[in-house]
Structure formats: C-alpha cells, structure tokens
Image (cartoon, rainbow, N blue to C red):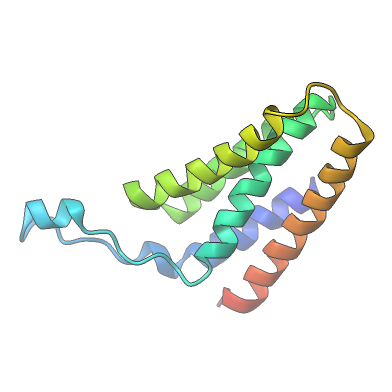
Length: 138
C-alpha cells in the first residue's frame, strides 16, 4: 500500500512540467488539434512502468492477491496526473494492455513462476519510480 502511495506521489511530482504545455486552439484550430507536445524525458520509463502495471494487474488477480484492481487504478491515476494528449495516452494504455495480455496468453493458474514474476515486477516498479523521482522531480 505504501509503495502505491509513493508511486502516485512521485508521478504527480514528475508530471508537473509536462502538463504545462498546451496547444493554442484559438489561433489555428486544425493545427491545434493535431499538435501534441513532445513527451517528457522520462517517457521510456513511464511506458515500461505502464507495462509492468498491466502485468501486475493480471497476475495479482490470477493469484488472488486481493489488490489487483488497485494496479489498474494506479494506471488511471498516472494518466490523470500526466494528462497526456490522445496519441501519448493511447501509447500508455497500449503498453498497459500489452503487459496484461502478455501474461493472459500463457498463465491460466497461479504458479510459482507467476509469483516470481510478480516479485520481479514489484521490484522493477519500485526501482523505476525511485529512479524517475530522483532524476526528474523538482
């Protein structure tokens, strides 16, 4: 639970500058709709984190951990904090879904391998959040 709280706080802190850039819709509406600001410098880490969260969402539900829905909510919180444009949002959601489907395709029951992957993913998520927070928070 504390990890998830730290994850959300870190992403809200990091997302601050990325949400300040907005297209100017009043001047040229057709250009403004297609314009999307460049992704933040930590985008690769955030995409990987989305994939990890998707995998955790599936595996935690498969293994009846009781907190599976929370991982999906964490992804929704990231999207809310980042406020991405439509293209960036679709990339983040696609990576979350990819993480989910990767395990959905081959795991039908909770196995020792499933539990090992969960442990590895939890560790990777912690490291990613810590790294992004240390490098990019202001």
